Image (cartoon, rainbow, N blue to C red; front, side, top):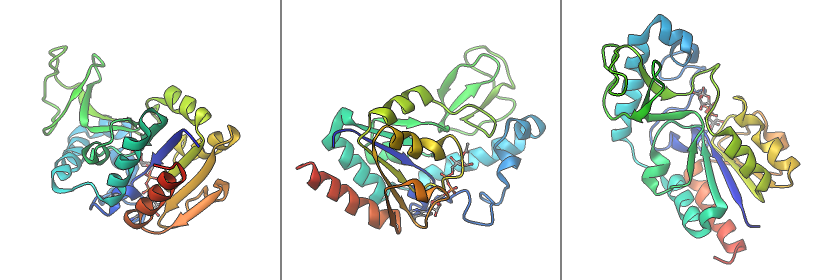
Length: 234
Ligand code: OAD
């Protein structure tokens, strides 16, 4: 085994204190996803959408990476360029745990994008509809750099290339219902990777994986990483 691609979802950050999307009656922090995570919602009620993501961004300072994030940082240290972490999460816990080879396919709370000039920049404070873009000097265009429903995820070319070269694909804490991420396991399998799911309960696409490890990420991920490192003689 040489190359490993990992896909993470909200479940890996759950034990750090960040709510997952689908665990509380389909509500995300009290909202239906289409109320806050679509371009239509932003067009109809930008103040509400800004408020929602401002709260999510502020929450990042109250949480810490957990044992699962830290185990993946150890794995990257051992594997170097043979490691790629693809995350659907918009939090920054992987980076804060020490991972550097991370692709945020659904964007990041720590970035903003101007819809008027398309320039992306770091975002560390609250966003408001009156904010002026530093690049084009116009107000009203700044939005969280989050991929909303109906928008194209980021980095797909690099992700598919890595899946095709992977020997091992591991999905952690993701429900397997949001595409295209839910289909990465099939793509990796078609290109001969071994596929492993680590999740609290079986994901919607669980049947496709070679191995399914059920339990909390903070418990199961460190054990599995240890197993991989031992198999690699590291
Ligand atoms: P979901 O909320 O859909 O699923 C979270 C998964 O994590 C579930 O399968 C849970 O069983 C599992 N889980 C919960 N706690 C866990 C724990 N302690 N250890 C291990 N697993 C645990 O989140 P995602 O699959 O990430 O997209 O959702 C995918 C996308 O849908 C998100 O990126 C977001 C959302 O709409 C956008 O915002 C574009």
